[in-house]
Image 1: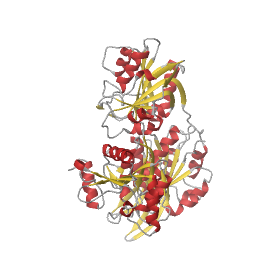
Image 2 (image 1 turned 180 degrees about the horizontal axis):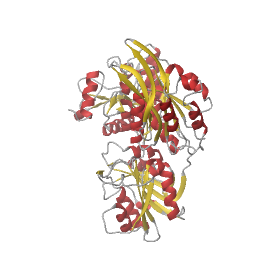
Image 3 (image 1 turned 60 degrees about the horizontal axis):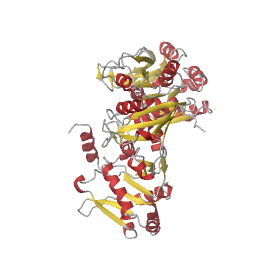
Image 4 (image 1 turned 90 degrees about the vertical axis):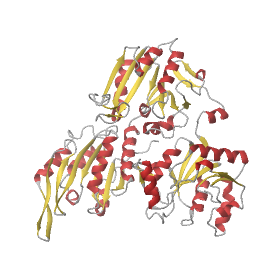
Length: 580
């Protein structure tokens, strides 16, 4: 059964903590992702360092009007009085016609006036009641922390999420909710058995070359449609493919456009598909938030039962093709976001050097208009890049005393540390767990969070609890303060635990120092770990005497980057941002 998506968000915080400022940041981030935002924002007005009032701002067109003012007489500060012009502008900004097609509607703020059934209350009631399950937007109410419970009681039947304005992960959580809302239960995927979809982990990895190779193989005997999909986040001229001034994104009129390629002699990807053997080729340019509508327009032209080869990552969010391949290249360290969004659906990762592929094309079959791939043996699945049959455990339950703040949520290039670690591991492991006692703090990652069986016993208890919850015998344990993960070295550790039949494989730096929170543990090491814990021990090294342990030199990789102090974090953040 599909989960019910959160439709109401309470954006909370103490008075004057920066709720409206954080909402303005949220609006920019959400629009950058390609989502449509509407509603009303309360812009603060200050005079001589004192808050004197608010203006209502329509998020659709930027128009503003005075919403509230307070009289200040010397040191005496009077209460706020509301102004009709601002209330009128806000009501217009929240009208059904103004918020049409919005993915996110913001109401800043929802307070005592609304609790008295005044202000913007009636508009919010209508918005929460309107729309079909397929088109309902997410409503975000900016609410003072002390009023959150009262506001929640007004809408007890609406799926709701409470987020804190001052927490950096809250913006990412909203974006995650919007993505799920867009591709959730109300938007059932379209099943197209005749479509072979090819995605890519990064730019220029050989996606079109693979499509052309398949068209050359299968296009000789039957008509196959070639499809190129360009997904656009925002029509602001900053094209992620061709750079500023490319025009692909900014020239799009409306939400989508379908054009047919007729020239097979140019160097464009669509022309190459036509030259390779496609009977016809179509280019779909579509806003990320309107993939379903763009697909429907394309299918009206080519038909649902047509055999096709399609280049796209994002379209996999609305289509269940007969076969979904993703192209990668050796050494690619970071996957683009559209690849991470659909990685879980892949049937086969294909490694490419632009000319050759590590896949036998004869394994791909087109039978009765349906694409399939022959199954392969266990050894070949490992070689082909299918996720390692192992669990990655991210240890994030520490107190961060030396850092002075929660290191797992420190930002590096706009992403929290724990999110960076997850992104480096995602796709390489069959399962990823978070070892932490605060489930809410890391819920935005969408991973299983394993609390300690007995709190406040240190990282050894965290490892024990996570090993017990793991679905695999082999487990890679990594601390949340490791700045960079060398996956080649991690694979070496995993190979060594299999080869040596050790219980634990631990890296060392050659000076007697070892890294137990960047190591591989078999699940059967639990017996020794529990024995140490039951005797009152907390040091991971105490376990080594009770197990078969293999130590591996870090060698030329040098010391792992552990961020324990604010100075170490600031230095790492500068290097990542190119400021050193």
